[in-house]
Length: 215
Length: 215
DNA sequence: TAGATTGTTAATCGATTAACAATC
DNA sequence: TAGATTGTTAATCGATTAACAATC
Image (cartoon, rainbow over all chains, first blue to last red; front, side, top):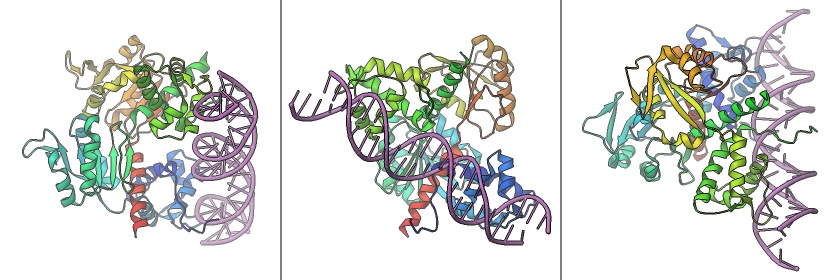
């Protein structure tokens, strides 16, 4: 048996944390001082055991009968999930999807901020949703100067790899990839692909399965 | 042990099928007649065992040494994943994200077609990327008339549930939900939520974990 | 005290990985 | 035949679910 104190977490589990955070912040705003796994589970219609286990992973310590001190729990989750510091991001490809993401108000709650955007067709002093847009040639330089660690990729497939290289050269360590391209990156860089085709496949399969069972 | 011939499939597995389909169609275009799991695995940098297992789930029958007859395999996958018929879809909320999806050319390869879009602010004869845009009031009627089975939701959070109800009333059986709202739907309706916050959490966690291990 | 909740340990389940016989 | 690949059966692994003692 390994002796590590802090257990890791699979991606299933991690995906639930934004939901917890949202609920817990709501509760805090309502003036609550404690939050029990049971209550959070009820609000999210989750199994309480799942919530308890997830909370345990963060290292937060609760009190029987009361639950977890709300502040501590939020803190522990933010630390656990990497939300405690504002991560700096840039977005490349200010087309329709890119603009949609730039206009999304929820990202600041998610612990990061889009500092700048880049596009081939950027014009002088262009801004989208308050974010300045620069020509794509300036990626590496500006990324390095700003100290950006996350790049969001909403470019045409053909240039995805090239842009990724430029981002990494500037010091980016994570890429949120909205293209279907399988990027080649060095080992220290994390890529998360947003795979719409895969999601759709899951939806189709379920849809289709229901149809079959109706026969 | 259950006696069912056809095993089900978890969503992990299903997510890989669009990738298989793409590779296999490429191979077909190149004039290949057979495709072995091994070759497909190599192209995708997957473990060959995974591919073999996935192919087996579709019911396709291969031949030792040769692999699977390409046509049969594509057919089997399409049938398995529900891609064999063009599913009709509508999109509601023709804002930035909605427009981005309407303009995405890859959906026809994914087995579905967006027949119409709806928006509060639709104007007469409006089209986006060739898809007609109608006022939101007409959802139920038009969905029923067109025989649409899939609704894509890119509306503001506040009206997500209301629009969903309208879609379901029109006969939609699947909802691809791009809002963070947890929709309430009857049992026969399938909802797939596209949860950007969850994806981001996974990315952040990995990013953060790497940072820690560098210390 | 009684009861709700935490925290831990064990059981179950499903998917991935491994091993190997069967086949062309 | 030799060798590559399928198809099946077993082993491993990780996550979910269950059970229960400890605690306030």
